[in-house]
Amino acid sequence: MNQSLFIKGPHNILFILGIVGCLFFVEALVHQMYLDYDFQILDIKLKCEQPLNNRCVYEYMVRNKNNSINKIELDGFMFKKEELEVGYFIKKEKFSFEYRINGENKVWGFAKYHLLILLASFSALVFWVILSRKLVAGKTDR
Image (cartoon, rainbow, N blue to C red; front, side):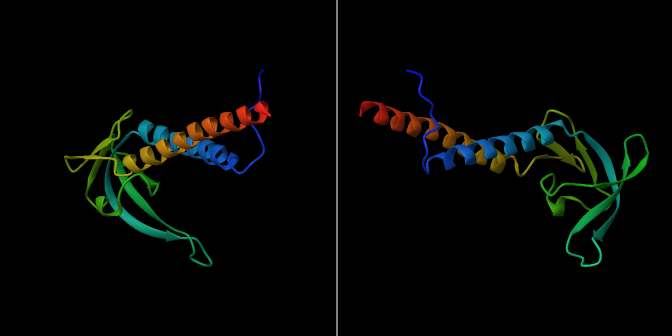
Protein backbone atom coordinates (compact mmCIF):
# COMPACT_ATOMS: atom_id res chain seq x y z
CA MET A 1 0.00 0.00 0.00
CA ASN A 2 2.15 2.84 -1.30
CA GLN A 3 -0.02 5.90 -0.91
CA SER A 4 1.22 9.36 -1.82
CA LEU A 5 1.61 11.94 0.94
CA PHE A 6 0.24 14.60 -1.40
CA ILE A 7 -3.38 14.87 -0.34
CA LYS A 8 -5.16 18.07 -1.27
CA GLY A 9 -5.48 20.43 1.64
CA PRO A 10 -4.15 23.51 3.36
CA HIS A 11 -1.44 21.51 5.13
CA ASN A 12 0.54 21.53 1.84
CA ILE A 13 1.51 25.14 2.57
CA LEU A 14 3.87 23.64 5.18
CA PHE A 15 5.55 21.65 2.42
CA ILE A 16 5.95 24.67 0.14
CA LEU A 17 7.26 26.95 2.91
CA GLY A 18 9.57 24.23 4.19
CA ILE A 19 11.11 23.49 0.79
CA VAL A 20 11.52 27.17 -0.14
CA GLY A 21 12.96 28.02 3.27
CA CYS A 22 15.39 25.11 3.27
CA LEU A 23 16.64 25.80 -0.25
CA PHE A 24 17.00 29.55 0.24
CA PHE A 25 18.75 29.44 3.59
CA VAL A 26 21.02 26.48 2.77
CA GLU A 27 22.14 28.40 -0.33
CA ALA A 28 22.73 31.56 1.76
CA LEU A 29 24.75 29.67 4.39
CA VAL A 30 26.84 27.84 1.79
CA HIS A 31 27.45 31.08 -0.12
CA GLN A 32 28.62 32.84 3.05
CA MET A 33 30.79 29.91 4.05
CA TYR A 34 32.64 29.87 0.70
CA LEU A 35 33.50 33.59 0.70
CA ASP A 36 37.17 34.46 0.98
CA TYR A 37 38.08 38.08 1.74
CA ASP A 38 41.31 39.83 2.59
CA PHE A 39 41.21 43.56 1.88
CA GLN A 40 41.43 47.10 3.24
CA ILE A 41 38.63 49.60 2.64
CA LEU A 42 39.97 52.69 0.87
CA ASP A 43 36.75 54.56 0.05
CA ILE A 44 32.98 54.18 0.37
CA LYS A 45 30.44 55.70 -2.01
CA LEU A 46 26.67 55.49 -2.05
CA LYS A 47 25.55 54.62 -5.57
CA CYS A 48 21.85 55.02 -6.43
CA GLU A 49 19.91 53.80 -9.44
CA GLN A 50 18.72 56.62 -11.66
CA PRO A 51 16.33 58.34 -12.37
CA LEU A 52 14.34 57.59 -9.20
CA ASN A 53 17.17 56.84 -6.72
CA ASN A 54 15.01 54.00 -5.46
CA ARG A 55 17.79 51.42 -5.13
CA CYS A 56 20.98 52.44 -3.41
CA VAL A 57 24.02 50.30 -2.62
CA TYR A 58 27.36 51.09 -1.08
CA GLU A 59 30.30 50.68 -3.42
CA TYR A 60 33.61 49.99 -1.69
CA MET A 61 37.02 50.76 -3.15
CA VAL A 62 39.31 48.13 -1.61
CA ARG A 63 42.95 47.11 -1.73
CA ASN A 64 43.33 43.33 -1.87
CA LYS A 65 46.16 41.39 -0.25
CA ASN A 66 48.05 41.40 -3.60
CA ASN A 67 47.87 45.25 -3.61
CA SER A 68 45.37 45.40 -6.50
CA ILE A 69 42.56 47.94 -6.12
CA ASN A 70 38.99 46.90 -6.91
CA LYS A 71 35.45 48.17 -6.55
CA ILE A 72 33.10 45.78 -4.79
CA GLU A 73 29.50 45.80 -3.59
CA LEU A 74 28.92 43.73 -0.47
CA ASP A 75 25.62 41.99 0.19
CA GLY A 76 23.58 43.34 3.07
CA PHE A 77 23.88 40.03 4.89
CA MET A 78 27.68 39.88 4.89
CA PHE A 79 28.63 42.58 7.36
CA LYS A 80 26.89 45.06 9.58
CA LYS A 81 27.09 48.62 8.23
CA GLU A 82 29.01 49.92 11.27
CA GLU A 83 31.72 47.28 10.69
CA LEU A 84 32.74 48.77 7.34
CA GLU A 85 34.61 52.06 7.65
CA VAL A 86 37.40 53.58 5.57
CA GLY A 87 40.78 52.20 6.64
CA TYR A 88 39.42 48.97 8.14
CA PHE A 89 41.08 45.65 7.29
CA ILE A 90 38.66 42.79 6.59
CA LYS A 91 39.75 39.15 6.46
CA LYS A 92 37.47 36.13 6.10
CA GLU A 93 38.64 32.65 5.20
CA LYS A 94 36.70 30.01 3.30
CA PHE A 95 34.70 27.40 5.22
CA SER A 96 34.14 29.66 8.20
CA PHE A 97 31.56 32.03 9.62
CA GLU A 98 34.27 33.96 11.45
CA TYR A 99 36.10 37.01 10.16
CA ARG A 100 38.52 39.63 11.42
CA ILE A 101 38.03 43.39 11.31
CA ASN A 102 41.17 45.33 12.27
CA GLY A 103 42.46 42.27 14.14
CA GLU A 104 39.25 41.76 16.14
CA ASN A 105 37.61 38.34 15.69
CA LYS A 106 33.89 38.37 14.96
CA VAL A 107 31.28 35.79 14.04
CA TRP A 108 28.99 36.43 11.08
CA GLY A 109 26.12 38.24 12.77
CA PHE A 110 23.33 36.80 10.65
CA ALA A 111 24.34 33.12 10.97
CA LYS A 112 22.12 32.46 13.98
CA TYR A 113 19.07 33.93 12.22
CA HIS A 114 19.72 31.91 9.08
CA LEU A 115 20.18 28.74 11.12
CA LEU A 116 17.01 29.45 13.12
CA ILE A 117 14.91 29.93 9.98
CA LEU A 118 16.49 26.83 8.42
CA LEU A 119 15.51 24.84 11.52
CA ALA A 120 11.95 26.23 11.34
CA SER A 121 11.75 25.31 7.63
CA PHE A 122 12.98 21.78 8.31
CA SER A 123 10.49 21.49 11.20
CA ALA A 124 7.68 22.53 8.83
CA LEU A 125 8.69 19.70 6.48
CA VAL A 126 8.74 17.15 9.31
CA PHE A 127 5.37 18.37 10.57
CA TRP A 128 3.99 18.18 7.01
CA VAL A 129 5.14 14.54 6.70
CA ILE A 130 3.57 13.61 10.06
CA LEU A 131 0.32 15.40 9.24
CA SER A 132 0.17 13.93 5.73
CA ARG A 133 0.70 10.39 7.03
CA LYS A 134 -2.15 10.84 9.49
CA LEU A 135 -4.39 12.12 6.70
CA VAL A 136 -3.41 9.20 4.42
CA ALA A 137 -4.00 6.74 7.27
CA GLY A 138 -7.40 8.35 7.97
CA LYS A 139 -8.36 8.04 4.30
CA THR A 140 -7.45 4.35 4.09
CA ASP A 141 -9.34 3.48 7.29
CA ARG A 142 -12.66 4.44 5.69
